[in-house]
Figure 1 (tube, rainbow, N blue to C red):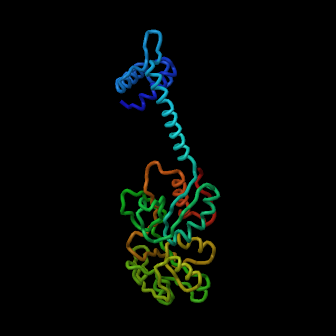
Figure 2 (figure 1 turned 120 degrees about the horizontal axis):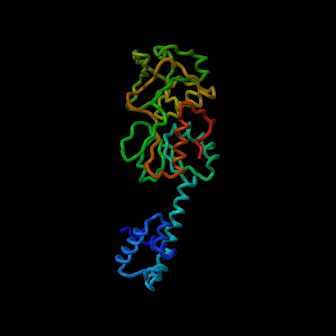
Figure 3 (figure 1 turned 180 degrees about the vertical axis):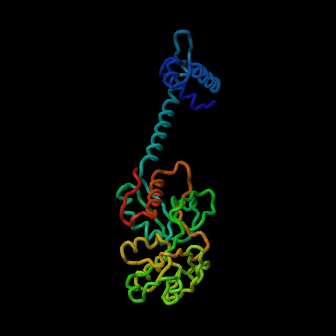
Length: 310
């Protein structure tokens, strides 16, 4: 027996004064209501109603029991409604861990648009390239590169691992525009320095694979620094398309070698939004995840467009 359900039926019977009327209000048959009351009486070992063919009234014990359980049921219903309202209200703080480049170049610049639509939401964002345990650190949403190892997490792809080569218009005006990957040996290239990245840039055009050694005076593991260097005219850079989309749209960078597919590593470097819960995701988190998905979509315009509707 579900005792809480039986108590709820009891309060309806006490209010209605009959099993049939209580059943009508609850959408139950009269026999089901009667069985629930009998099971409850047996469970607490006391008779709650005086029954006759014409009347159904509470016993003294039933009156005392009703006085005790009715307020508790009202509190439970209030708690249920409060929790449901909280789920529907888009407010509160969201703890975000994001890749430094994704946060600085894309997410933070777009937050005014998000806050305009959701003024009761606050974002607590940490920009870091290190992965952390989301649950133990209280993180609601993370933005990571590469595949997800923890099957308990949920990951949605934000952007494929698509790279572009670009430089500032000033640099290209001074040094020329490379027409093919082999031309890169004559250019200053800004190198992303990681253990799995070689000092060569690789390209594919149809079935043709091309590996070109590159060199330059700036090497770093920080993508934001590479973008700043490229915009400052230090040379050519190969980065994820979403990292430089805004700078390209603003004319600060210009893409080259667009006929070639660029890939510096065989590893999956797609961008994912990761969160720890699949079911009953708080609405504030859900709309922020949707915001990120739209923000990184290929057709998205930096600083323009609209957010998903509430």
